[in-house]
Image (tube, rainbow, N blue to C red; front, side, top):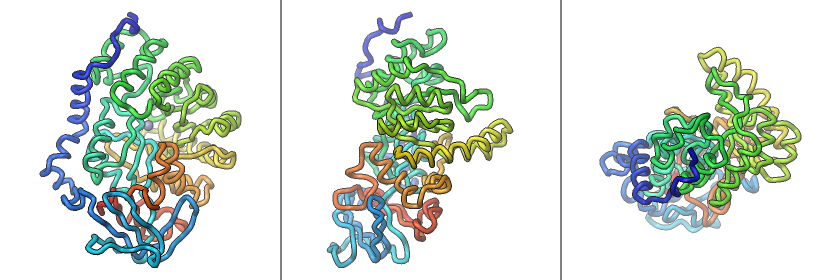
Length: 424
Ligand SMILES: [Zn+2]
């Protein structure tokens, strides 16, 4: 068959139907009803409408400058920071809800630059663990688009999310059932490989409103029967994907492991390299030159090492030190890094865990924190609103029990999280 003959993926009814199904699957429709929102621990109406909130008394860390301000006050109005700084410089509004942060540290909400949020429960878990912004690493049925909407309607229930829609991969699996505009691809022998088929999956995603396009160059590490060093798309195929995504004004994040695959993906023009365990020197040089981000998802690889499957456990144990070396080499060469947990399948890992692993790879505490604040915010194009607590930035706050510069592990279990001016 020729997918070029197919009509463009633009039917409004189709889009509405598809996204309603995504919302139902993600459970976000239920999350938006008052009763379920209350049972999910949603904030009061007052909080949800973004009345004033003041965080006061703690030590404020600005990841952009590394500056530390003791006895700080952060004033949030309508979900946005109106003022942040030393108590003497900040006027505290009357009648605002106050979060006492004495003896604690105040940081901007964190960013998880690679997470798979399939349900409203996962979205809520991510926020409560400090990821107030996130980028999706794809979902099988566009659930991330539904979660993105949930975050807009009820910010306390989900991270501000950039969606990636469905995976551009040779075998679409059950995703074939996600969308009438994809079903025809099931007839293709050998899966999604031709230039037309690759373009089709990208264009369907764009028509559904994705912010990113997710693809892969290598097989998966998390399945014992797959060889993560085996390459599934060539430079030319990756170039088709990148070009189609760019036509829609979107960047590509690419799952990768082997050096040749990393190199092909980076030179094809991807925006960020995901996992990238065996990324080599020549590719890092190219990434630095192009400003390509590295999202190593150390948490995911560390998680493999704890697998009950011996093949996966061995893979995790061998890969983790190699990946840590790659992270440090990238950092030393000026390749921008972004923190991502690659959480999926119901278990949301705290983004603080990724910061901890970035630090254990050799980054300073401040640089490790930057991978989940200013650095990741820039990757998401949110550097003017996310990653710092300053006037005009999002009212997303993580309050930590101790000094994260002395011990980054305090970020794994935030004492309190504020999302868009709502204390959770
Ligand atoms: Zn992933």
